[in-house]
Length: 420
Image 1 (spheres, rainbow, N blue to C red):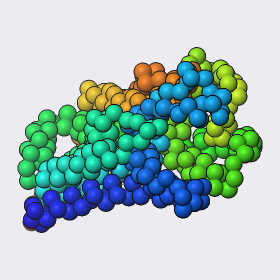
Image 2: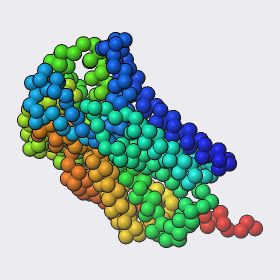
Image 3: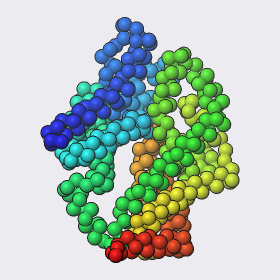
């Protein structure tokens, strides 16, 4: 495919990704505006609020400034009139990341991944700048540099990851192939980079799935508390629908919190609070319905949950070891130790990034500290994955593996032998 077509298609992908994200925020707010305010609504405020929330969904921190009329009607102290909100609904960020990765893979399949990545990244950055300049609300404000750079960085990261992954596996007749040839020349150490990333991807998917199951289990066990908080909010059908939609957008954020709970460090719901398998210490929790899923108490038996990340590491070790046996590479102890360490470090890095995105401030005062702590979460995941992965990758090679290698060797010898 011609390079110009790849550039244009990548630019179109960026335009579609930004447009779909904006519509996903704008559509429900338009419905809310119509039903709540009627034809006399202040339509000039619709786009600034929607655009700002689009930025927030990509991880841009917001500053909330409540007007005096709201403070007096709700009886809120003036000290709490201005506060930050920095725990975003990660569903929109994940959509942008996955859409960008697909665009990057298509550009790599077309043979011009670098041009596609640059084109898509530039177009999405321009769209982010346009939204940042035009969508400036009075109540919700975001730094302009963050409103431009953070969404553009998310899209660029997805583009680059998708393009490089496809180019590494299929080839690009360029710089990726040259790097691939250099790595292939490392002999027994050649599979270390790729298998480390592949193992970390297995850990991430497995731990995410386990955390999602945990959220589902808590929904079944404590669904009554969520319903009670919905009823206490005294909202109508429209309000309940908007709250439900907001909860769905925050579902990936809750999965990160659940993963931190499974790993052991848990998460906070305010300064000086902790929710972990070792114990739960909570003060006054905001009346947000989804927070009804938080367990009120813990048991020492819940510490068994830390076996889940260890099992995820063991699964990654088993899958990587199977590939090494099949490819008859990385058979030495030290290459496998390097792969084990690489899986642990990359998994810890992913956990740290997830904690950064899913933690921050959710309100004034003590609510400025919420979500998992970055360091403890990353350290716990790294150590637990190292244990599980090491058990599968560093144990001595058993007889079945050796017998399989001998069988493959003699089969190759027989195939290569000249026929009389």
